Every structure is written in structure tokens, then in C-alpha cells.
Amino acid sequence: MADELGVWLEAARVGTLTRGRRGLRFAYSDEAVERWPGNTPLISCSLPVSTRTQVADAFFEGLLPEGSYRDQLAGRAGVVSSDAFGLLRAYGRDIAGALVVSDTDVGPRPGEVLPLSGEDLATEVAELTDRPLGVHDDSELSIPGLQDKMLLVDLGDGRWGRPLHGRPSTHILKLDHRLHRGLVAAEGACLAVARAAGLPAADAQLVAVGDADCLIIRRFDRSNDVDAEGNLLTHRIHQEDSCQALGRSPRQKYEVRQGGGGPELSEIAALLDRHAAEPTAELYRLLEAVTFRVLIGDADAHGKNITFLLDPPGTIRLAPLYDTVPTVLWPQLNTEAAMTIAGMLNLASVTPETIAAEAHRWRLPRDPAAALATDVAQRVRAVVEENIVGISDERLRAHLLTRTGRFLGL
Image (cartoon, one colour):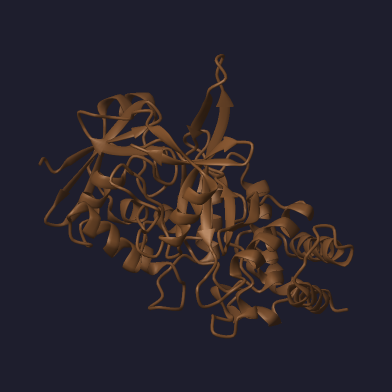
């Protein structure tokens, strides 16, 4: 088989992915070079439009799952786990963002959907441990991460389907953690609090599937439309996480932990400053997101949990909040920040002034930054105090009140 795969952005063939003894390489097509100016962050900030062939391991590795999930997918595809190219050949038709990676003579195709009954879905969820991402022989999909999850297509009226042959998925189902029960419920509650407090956050619903708690999350890198015949059309929206944008391996997602070397907030801010259509507005959105994760005690806000939407092509903006888990409620998990905030790792000690000091590194003025951080805390506290989103977990509710109170000096 040729060591060459085509890369499409929507319907446009934008380049070619090749592999050699030194890893993955990407070259933009002549059509892409003619259509977009040089240095445009078209598929990634780390892979701007250019006439030269570029090192592409970090970006394309970032499209694949991690750990044992990757090992199992590799076994199903008949390749070794380290073979990112072979994995993308098998699973590159529905991936994070708007790209399609496939054999060069095939290209994108609409795919199909297999409707799932309630019993079918329960069976799929029960088998996730043995079948990562709910992959079957007719699945050609991938999503990063280390959790038990699968991709679904919303068929309306509470009905779900399994995407086949590269059909774009619309939702991600996450199964509750086997050891740390209640994680998905807490994540869903925190996302609801964020939305009620006026912060952009992924839409999610907690559902029972069989005897398992699951969080079903609407993908923010997909949009739906209906054609004249009433058929559902799903459009891809391009995205990349900050590891991909900075050319870091997924193994370098933490700034300090697990060997370190991961993205720093100042580097993420620099990308927004350089490539966002409205840099100042995006930097303040980053400040709000950082503040919210501090308030809930999310120590897992690493480089793969901060994402950019490359929409329209050539510009970036922050994606909505996702993976907002108050990890400090589970003592077995990490309690120190995944990224330093003005040099600090202890989330409980972060104040509005700490946030302002970090924002000052991004060239934002201190006083407005501290005022915005305080405002976020006040909005979150009001949502919790007034029980606007109906937090059923009293431990989480008490935690959020304690955290916001300490942050506000109450």
C-alpha cells in the first residue's frame, strides 16, 4: 500500500500526508497554495500554508486516542500501535475537526447511519471497554482521549444512530468512570453552570443507558442542517487543540506533570493574539475560561482540553468549554493545576489578582482582568445559590459555593 494519504478540508483536497523513516510529513496541494496566502493557519497553526513539506507528527498524532484505547484500535486495524499513519488510514474519515484523511483515490464520502434501539445502545455502551469508541469493522472514526466513549449521530426525537463509513458524527457519549463514579454527572453539571453563567460551553445531557450513567455531548465541531427533502445534513467545523496548534506531542499535554513540556497559558494567548480575528475579545474569553476552571477545581485543564476553532479558515477562536471536571472532589485524582497560573499550581490559592498577573503576561491590563475574574466568580456563585440549573449533588453544590466564596474573599 502506498505510504500516501489525501487530506481534505470539506470538499477541497488541501494536501498529502506521507510517512517515512523519520515520521509523518504533510505537503499542501498546489490548489491550496494558490487559494490561501502563505502562512495561513489552514489546518493548524503549526502547519501554515507553505510550498515546503512540513513535519506533521504532532498534529496528526493528536487526532488519535491514547493509551490502551489506541492499542486496541491498532489491533483491530492490523497495525502496530506506533503506526499513526496506518491508524489514520483505517480511522481517518470522521475525526476531530473538519478534515478527512483517506486514500488519495477515494476522498470524502457521505457515509451512512445505523439506527440504534435503546437495547442496541445499551449493548454498545456495555461493550465499550472491549470495543473502544464503539468501533466496528464498518467504522472509520477516531477521537482523542483516554476515556470510555463512542460517537453517535442524532436522529431526532431521542433516537441515536451509529456512524458508518466516515459519516460525520454529531455527539460524543462518555461513559462514567469505572473507578471514580460520578465524574460525568459532575462534568455535565459544571457545563450547565458555565452556560447559565454566560460562558460558552458545550451542550450536554446526563442519561442512563442500561445500568450506566453517560454524558451525551453535542459536538461543537459539527453543525446540522436539513435539506429540501427533510434529510439531516451534518457539516464539519475545523478545530485543533493547543498541543496540535503548538506542535506538541499528545504526550506533552501537561505543562509540569508527566514529564512536562506541555502548552503554557501564555503560549495559547500568543496564538490568539497572532491569529484571532478579534484578539482582545478572545484573550478575555480565555481569561473567563481559566477563571471558571479554577473555580470548579479542574486540575486536568491540560493542552488537549483547550481547543481552537479554525472558522473561518485562516483565523482562530476559542472553542466552548468542555471536559470541565471538578477533579479536586476525587482525592485520587490530581489537585494541582495542569497549567501554571502566574507561576502557581495550587488552584485553591488562586485569587483574582493571580488571574490578573497571568493575564498581564498576555498583555492585558491588570485591573480589568481582575474585575472580569471577579465578575465570573459572582455569576457562577449566583447560578449555584439560586439553583438555576438544579445541581442535585449536594457535595458539588457545597464545593462550588466554598470555592467561589474563597475566591471572592467572602
